[in-house]
Image 1 (cartoon, rainbow, N blue to C red):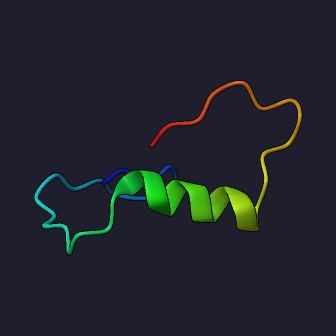
Image 2 (cartoon, rainbow, N blue to C red; image 1 turned 90 degrees about the vertical axis):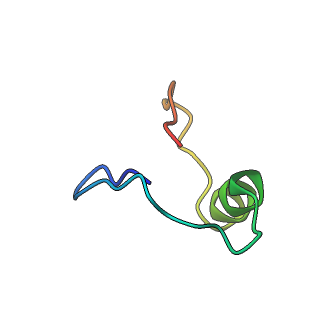
Length: 41
């Protein structure tokens, strides 16, 4: 996992929630501004 304002780690175990589902939820709660051209997940 990578945080834009903090540390990154690579050894996380997933509990079964796909990253796509988390990103969808996040985008529903906080839509991207029209000028956004890139998203890093």
